[in-house]
Length: 303
Image 1 (spheres, rainbow, N blue to C red):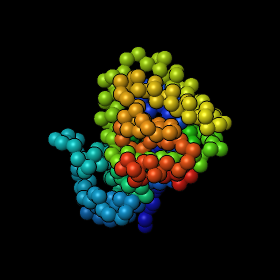
Image 2 (cartoon, rainbow, N blue to C red; image 1 turned 60 degrees about the horizontal axis):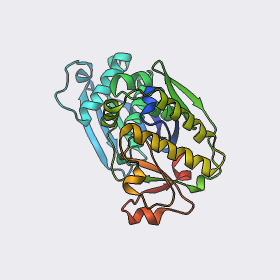
Image 3 (spheres, helix red, strand yellow; image 1 turned 90 degrees about the vertical axis):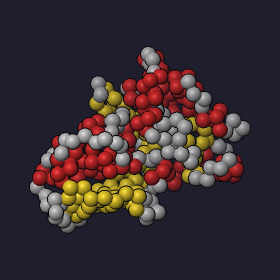
Image 4 (cartoon, one colour; image 1 turned 120 degrees about the vertical axis):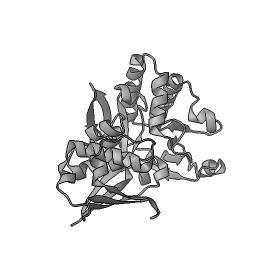
């Protein structure tokens, strides 16, 4: 008998990096996501196959139960070892899924390109947590780390305000339905950022961030409640300047799109994945002329 699990992808509109330290963030689940299909087999192993959005197999391997139960550390990072790490932590939280089974065949299917940074890891972790019947936030903390906003998006079908209090996730479902969504676009920057590396770089640079956290939280509230495009855009531009100052990095508009007539806001890890664009007219010709071919309207991206 097959069991199928599904999780939404994510985009972090405000609060990037500072959400790790308690700032309030606006996060939006996407129409794209990942499923995980589990079938019981035998041989005390998991036969695993992962499919990209185009149907191609991007990972395939067989993992014996003995490797999951083992505590032997890995000598190097790899896709397989990352998956085993997640499965090991899931096993620690609920061993029954392994000990009470003969084996599994598992397949995963992304509905977005794994290059896009919409949550290949977070959707996987949330799906494995559903399969093992464990807390996904705990599994994330024990395996990958991060704030957990992506897990919250995986589990919710509406916009959320997210922050951490004493390390615990606080999730507030919100109505975020701008009247100007026809002017909002998401543009892929042709390179996927490594979240672990980006977070490590942020931790190296951060100083006392109490004031910055308050500013970002206030801007998050402004963005979420904005009634008009101008208020929305100005708040996002202030957000970019604040993060630019903290990270000592140029904004993405300064770096790549200084001649663009509109707002460009980094999302998630700076320097990769998607940006949010606010434009009066369809900006596709502009971005395609710069070599950025993936431009997705808000209505096609966000749940």
